[in-house]
Every structure is written in C-alpha cells, then in structure tokens.
Length: 442
Image 1 (cartoon, rainbow, N blue to C red):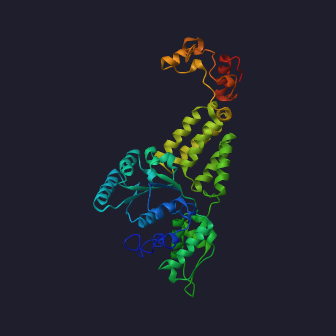
Image 2 (cartoon, rainbow, N blue to C red; image 1 turned 90 degrees about the horizontal axis):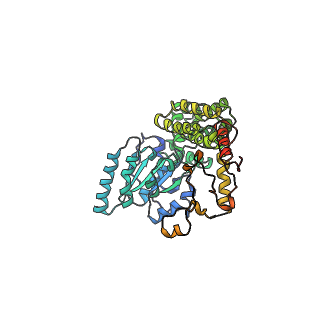
Image 3 (spheres, rainbow, N blue to C red; image 1 turned 135 degrees about the vertical axis):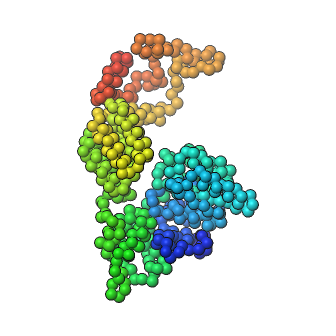
C-alpha cells in the first residue's frame, strides 16, 4: 500500500497555517485516509480503479464529513489529472462550460485528462446537469460528484447511467479515533502542544460521524480553553459542548436512534395518533435529520398505510416533498407537521401493499401465464387469424361501462388481490366493485 501514493502534495503547497484544522490535516496519501475500507481497502473496487489509473465518472453518496472531497482529490493526484472543484450552490452552467473548455484544450494540447469535482451535485438543476452530459460521454471530463441525497432522486438518469455510484459509509468509532490521533500528532500547530481530550466519545457523538465537524470542534474548543500551569491543554466535556454550542441529543441520525425514532414516527401515523407523530418528527428535526428523508417516508406510508381509504394523502405527501425542496428549513417544519397530522388523522388501509405483494407472489410462483386471447393485441393479419382479440367486449358499450369478462389468466381467473377496507373512500370502492363483480365478493 505504501507505494500507491507518494508524499508529493496534491496541490502546489500545503494549506497555510491559518487554514482550518480540517483542511490542514486533510489526507495527502491513502495511508492517511481513514474509513471507507469497503471502497479503498486492498482489492476493493475504487482502489483497483485507482491502481489501474482508469477512472470512470463517479457519484459519491454519503453523509457529510466522510471523505468525499478528499477521495476526489486523491484520485486526481494519483492519475495526474487536472482537478477543478465547483460547489453546486454557487456554480452555474457558465462555470461548468468554462471548465469543459479548459479540459478540451488540455486534452487536445497536452493529452491530459481533467477531473471535475462537483460538491453537492444534487443542488444542480436539470439544465446544469444536462450541460455535463456530452463532455462526460465523450471523455472530455471525468466527473466526480458528491451528494448527501439519494442520487436516484436527485441526479438525472442519463448522467447517473454514465457514472459509478459509490456509497460512503458513516465513520465509526475506530475511524474517528484514528482521525483525532492523526490530527494531534501530524498538524504543525497541534503537534507542538500536549493536548488531552477528556471525553473523546462525547466529542464523537456531537460530531455525528462527521470528521470535518469533529476537527472543527477540537479547534474551537482549544480557543476556549486556558492552558494548564505546565502549558498542557485539557479539553473538558464542558468546553467541547461549548464549542458545538449545544448538548448532545440522543437522536443520532446515523445510529440506532435513527431507526428507532423513524419507526416510532411511522407507527404513530399508522396508529392514527397525530400528537405522537408530530413529537417523533420533532425529535428527528431537532437531531438534524434531513427533512427530505421524513417526507419520503410519508410518501411511502401514504400508500402503504392509507391508500385508497384517503387517496388525497398521497397527493399531499408528494406536494410536501416538493414544498420542502423549494423552501428548506426552518419553514419546511410547518409543511412536514401539516402533512404528518393529516396522514395520522386519515382513515387507514393497507389493501394496496397487500394486493401488489400477493400478485408478485403469484407472478414468481407461476411465471409467464398466457394472456387470454380475447384481450391480446392483434396488430398483424396472422395474429388476427389466430384469434388474438376475438370476442373482446369494449367496456364502454355496456351499462356502467362494464362488461363482465375475464382479464386474469385462466389459472387465476377467480383470484382476488385488491380487497378494499371498510374505511374512508375504500368502503365506497368496495361496494362498487361488489356491485359490478357479483361473483367476486371482496
């Protein structure tokens, strides 16, 4: 591993002493990089790509402070590529095109590749992402994007299909301890001092697995702390807490509490308790949970737990997601609260998920059952002669726009998948279907 990266600097010089600690100790070799061993460990996919020097476009997806930017820089350094970094919040299409123009000159004139790193790529709109497509496809630039959002939702499909998506995992206790130790020993400023951290686990809890936040917290706590008589420094729990400007909330969006509290929230909505639903939502928001994560869960439960008992619930949940994307926090909390209250108060039905899961079971156990001849398409003369579409009854020609003909395969012709509940609008749906399909009582 020692010969994969040299000690040469990635940029022209090391960050100035006035730079934040997180920048001063940013890894310059793979040996200094902690975490993500499922990607950069020996024999792992990203490391193999780096060793071969054949870098595809990449989307790094993961929480803040886990090494997305650092890995992008290390990759550019190793393959000796020009490296440009844009932040999607501040950059526009013109900035992207400027980089592309420089990359084209570099490729034609020097035969050198260019890596364009876009931080928070999920904040690029469709037009901005479209501007990248041709250059990525032609190999003018190699794109490395970083996002904390699910790229399936936030990155356009054509760009996603041209990129490898690598999931970055939250940093664990061992990784964070290694980062602390490395910072205290290697930084030109901190290594000259004797520094003791009274409660490193509390420091890690406050940083929530974010290495940048962890290091910034150490640096800020040092500013608040007077040296001991022997000039050593002890960072107490109180000084660490002061540096982070808040006490640790038991809600850890990367740990067990994340799953426990989102479970409590979903079950409260399902159980028609809007007060509990809003309380658990407040716990998540106070703990720093991504509002979009909560909104996505409400879209799912609007179908899974409410369904056609109140079909407007899905419309509201989808509108909630759109609204919070437009306005952001803290105002988004109001929209989330409104939606959670409505969904919790709505009548409930799980008929939709029961129906699709039952149908999928039959599809997998009885694959490729033939479509009944009378509802097949007959675009050719041969198909017409074979009886495709013969005796099909056009529903709109009958009373109630209904002709009681068979649509399921013969093996399943009497099967019931969708069984509406007695709640809300589904009660009316069930009565109507029973009236039409008298032989199939739901």
